[in-house]
Each structure stands twice: as structure tokens, then as C-alpha cells.
Image (cartoon, rainbow, N blue to C red; front, top):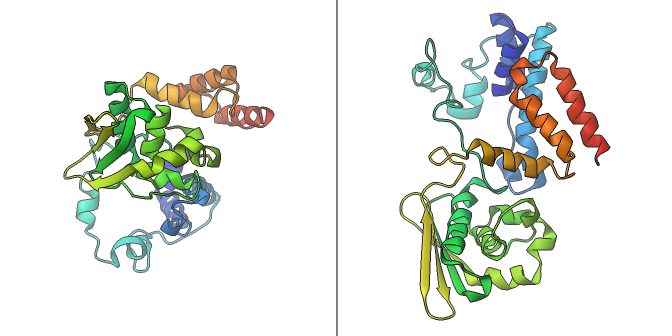
Length: 294
């Protein structure tokens, strides 16, 4: 629905066309939570955006839908959320003159690590612990993670992908490697000897309040701890522009998708998106360059 609304704005649709676009998008929305933990989960946001754009294009071409799809019986809100008892005053009262979308204020969480949102604080707490005390993995007899909600305990993830949802695995990777990145969640890393040896030495405990804590019991008898209340990239602790660019460069550059030169060219186009005369030139560059570098 958000994709359709954004595309309707970009395409300059009038009120009735926008209502049609939302009506079309309502029939194309949704994903199944049962797919969380599988590869298809990562396609949900992209598919939602694609369907939103397609809905707006169809509305512009004259396709029709129910113009009252949000509030009509058997419509979007009825089906997805409230079965007809949604308080629209609560939903819409902030809109109108002076409305600032949540995307702008207070902003959004940007995950520092490519793992489930509940893994962010535990992973960061371990990195802080490792850096603050100069820990080496072989010094740690046992590592306890205290999570303030959202952290899932999967002591023995069955694959690298499954590790995206395991506090024990993310904590182990942070301690062993000093980082949590794309390579962390490969089967090769999951079943490496040091990871297999480390996982049984990590446990998860409840934590009252926000954030996460990490406590290591060392071989020499000492105990050291660290915590984070808001992971780097959260609304409360946002990434800097340079940190966001560094993540972008890591994800697409270094010949992973684009060459370093093309990555910088892409950053330039995206940061000046409002002044790009024809967005098709940007899309052509992304598509052809990515294919050429595979």
C-alpha cells in the first residue's frame, strides 16, 4: 500500500486514480510470517514495492478497483487488521497540513547487521565487550547474553541462514570475528570448527528493560560485561552518513555486484535523485552494470 501511494505521487495521479491504485495494491499485499527464516522472506519488501508501482501504473492506464478499499467491509483494514472496528480518527489525525511522515521524524531503524532486528542489540553488546576488554575468543569460558526482548534463542542453527535468527550464533560470530556481515550467514561459516566449538559456550538469559547485555566468564576466573541500550543504526543511535555509505559500499561494491568505480557513480546518482532528469538512465545503469559484473 505504501509503494502504491508513493508511486501514485511520483506518477502524478489524481485523487480517483490514486484510490484505484490503492484498491489494486490491496489485492496484492501481504506475505506469510511462516516464511520468516527462509530465503523468500527477503523478497517480501521488494515484491511489495514492485506490486505497489505496478498498481499505480495499472490505475494510470484505467484499471479500476473499489475506491473505498481501506474502510469498506471485506476491504483492506477489515481483512488485515481489525475486522471492521479500526479507529480511523487515531490513524489519520496526524495527517493534513504540517504532517511529517514517520520516515522523516523520528526516522527509521537501519540494521547494522544483516540479521533479524532482535539480533542487533545482542550482537552490538558482544562487539562492545570484545573491544572494551580486548577479548580473544580463546579467553572466554562462557558467554551469557541478556536480551531485553526480540532476541530468539536458537542454540544450534541448522544453517547459516538460520543463524540470522539465533542470538547464540550472532553473539558467537561477533566474538570470534569482531564483525557480523554477509559472510557470517553462510553455511561455510556456520559449520567452521571454531563456530561449532563456540556455540555451546553461549547462553541466552532474559533482561528487564531495553537493549542487551553480554557477560563473559574468562578462563582466569574474571568476569567482564558490557551492554547497549540502543544498537548503532536505531532511531535512538543513528548511523552517520559515512557509516551508511560504508555499509552500502560493502553490500554492493568490491565487485560483489558493482565495481568500486560504478558503486561511486551509483552513490552520486542516488544522492542526487531529485535532479536526475530521467530515472530510466539510473535503472539501466543498475541493471546492465550488475549483469556485466556477475
